[in-house]
Length: 626
Image (cartoon, rainbow, N blue to C red; front, side, top):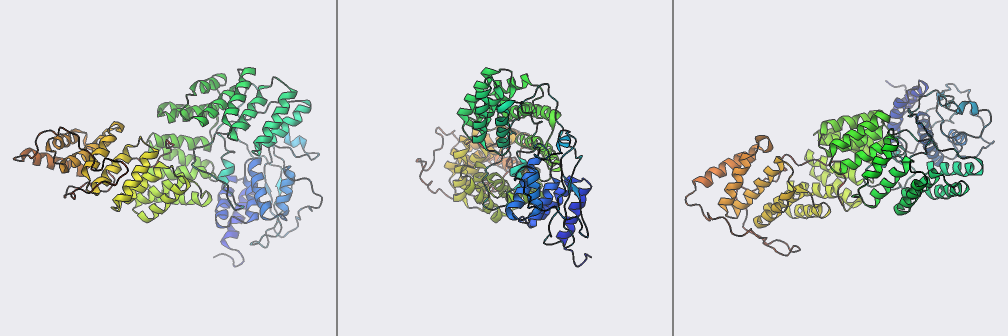
């Protein structure tokens, strides 16, 4: 039984602090993340989270969040001063250390060197991280717990790959998350920070620049870390003017343009950098990314190959090329490149992208393992929860998928992709009300999300709401004209409405999209049912026989039983009505595409079942063609 003066939250916070003292930072982040889920506006939780983070940017974000919530928070202010984010303030009193239970922890302060005398000897050694004693004022929930110390730490940092020449910092690859927008509240999901922090490759070292240009270069790098792209471009332009012939400055201007959405300008600057130094690998990768942003179908393989050829240890280039191959459905080459990137510098972000590629390749078990690895490597990285939810659902572990995705959406409530996957999971669970609610939210966030329309159609189909199902499948095909499943769904909706001419037309339209025997079986099943209802026994007989000729594992028991029954009935029927092969292809009952199909006689007992047949793939990480 808990002591009356301590709540469960207090106990958890004490455990987090103990973990920080013992340098069990992953465990501390896990506990603090749970606390933030219950109270995201508690500045003290954010201060402690800063002590558990791995990089300066993460700590800075946590401290800034705490400071916004409570500008009087001495711990947050002191930490921001030490990180150089606030000017020195003599009015900030040293933290009292004579409390009944003074706690201390270690926190790494890397990358930026605070302009404080006497500390240079520590920051010059990469094994050490600067710290200073930080304490907390009285916490709202913990009467005796008041101090946080920030001391010199020997915490390990991410392994950097030693390179022969110094190179500029390369922007981490942007993952394929759906939509993202700024939060209206002070709280901001940790994924917004971690997407740019946990990079799959070692950060390239910035090229030194001396004299006055060096100050401008440092200012540009500070702006780069803060995402101030206009400032980056302006400062780097000054360096390029003072030191003409420096390819890295032009590269960074290109990066600033690309990251601010000015892709053509970015391409021009990358070209100028290449003209100055044709052996500077990052410029080729940057140009490939900018071209893909302008045109996702652009052939950029030469630039990607060039970047890797110039630097065989360029993990980001392997990752980008792997994702490029995945978009081309060359999953073997994609997995090879992602594996090479992992050998150079593995990270949660790399495992996330590997999981997405494996989902697209329908290797669901392997995708789940990759997603689990990403989540275990950094439990605070929200992107891993999204991909983990996708993988759980693909593997049929629906309850786990729902739990993980609900957690993700608490912190990232504007991601259409996540709502689409969650809605599909609820559909699999048979909770159609929840499925419809989440899928509609996905469509509100992204009106071109074909996956959301598809699973909305499936949800309506399961409830025999054929009109809305048909409309949803038509919207799916509007934004993804290569979806066999959407055409199949439209055909089933027409059958539910008793419009067999239209079901026949809908299914034959997607015959050219069939990719495997499972889809071939479903195609033949729907077409045979339609032909039966259109009194075309010879054509139906051929389709039923073709269905039975397929491998047993590609069909359902219901399909085979129906096919066997109809073959016997059609063979023994005397006479067989309309035995001649139809000279004309059945035509739709409503030739104008925009008109509602006219009613035809109701379907007999052989109506197509509304449940989705096996083989329809789950929502995957493959970006929907727009």
